[in-house]
Length: 387
Ligand SMILES: Cc1ncc(COP(=O)(O)O)c(C=O)c1O
Image 1 (tube, helix red, strand yellow):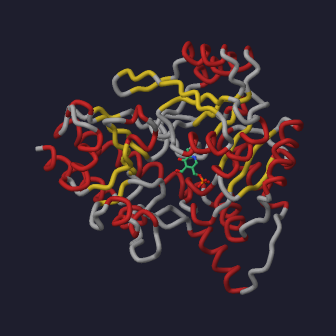
Image 2 (tube, helix red, strand yellow):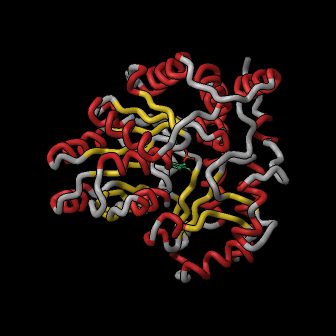
């Protein structure tokens, strides 16, 4: 059955549901009526196959401890094969509540206190936090900006590796600059990590969110020794159900990560998270294709508006994710002043660029996974605020 685009045009009202994005605006922005375009979830209902699975279990009524079912891993195997061309065996998959929990644990499994970890910056804030939680040292490798396109600086990365760094946190696709790395870029990266004996920990939570014309390459298709995190939560709007998968083909590395999960006491499975993920992977492909088309349309409308009305705002080319990275540095404002302008004058709640590190000064991240009318209204308010 074709997906009705009205599902995305109308979205769902999430106010007064304890929803972080809408109901915590006063706490986060000091203003309860900003248009919320920050935290990375969507104002759309998950596919019907997911809600049906949850309702069926709810009607049964027993919510005792649950374990995984072989169908859960098979759903991951099939999804990764058909959507991303990754071949997995059931043993390669571990379930965990969330990608960031997994990242903290995997770093702890492979590194020791005082070790350093490389990452391309600016990057999703918890990359820094996961490193610090393990008492390790952040080695930021600033990306190169060429107009609307951002790329890896492999020369700078090599200098970091020469100093002895043995772990690299990769964001694939990259949040916040919206890059889907090309296969060539990833191959060049892996050539370098192999040369210096560096292990790649790749966060692929946004991998399904590919804009038309772009295909994400899982690092596992280039480096079978990498650790990869995926999740249906970002793709199908299930973040509060807390369930994700860690993919590790290398047995020795997998055993270390498993032991670290056990040592940290992270165990058990969220029954609804498990059911939702399996249902989404088994039956959500058509919904996802319709979502991606809708988001690409919103991106195009936003880019056109900005080009015409605010041509000095530099917009990073959105290839993957639903998060647009906007460069306001032409205004020459202090970052705090820029933040204030966005909230108080434009009444828009963007993610502040500095949530992604110091290099985010002068930038804002705009989440466009909301009905298009909200995005266009936010841009209109932005234009009025910037005069
Ligand atoms: C790159 C990236 N990794 C991880 C997460 C969060 O994942 P989880 O909720 O599974 O910890 C996000 C959420 O925005 C993200 O953008």
